[in-house]
Image 1: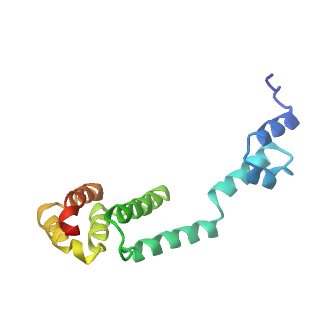
Image 2: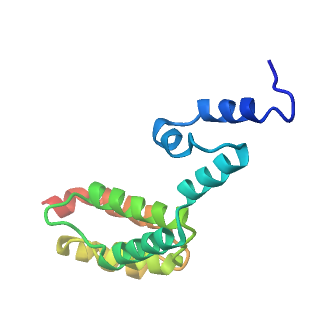
Image 3: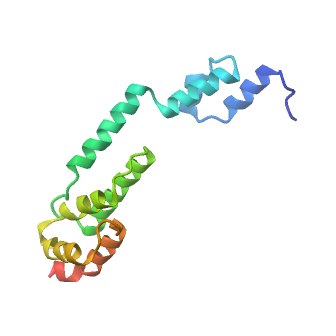
Length: 145
């Protein structure tokens, strides 16, 4: 059955039924659909302070990104990929050269020979860190020896 326009209580109940429990608990006292919408929007977007804290945390994570002792190239790449995804999701797009250098220059020392090869053979302004990872992964056996 479709609710008639102007049936505010039914609109509110319809909206409330589709919300996850944690959001429902924060909006079940709202009396209008507009109130619910504004509160949900604020919860999803976050406050200005929350947004600033998130940006600061992401930039700090970017600045401090480095390998973990004994970490595999796969794990390193997946952590880097997650960081890049978080940055993009928050509308922060490091230049290709910056992300490529960050990826290469923070690898474990045993990768230094291959990092040098990448610097000499790849255009870091246009290459993608996924391509760099593929090259490094291809040479994994030699690094492990």
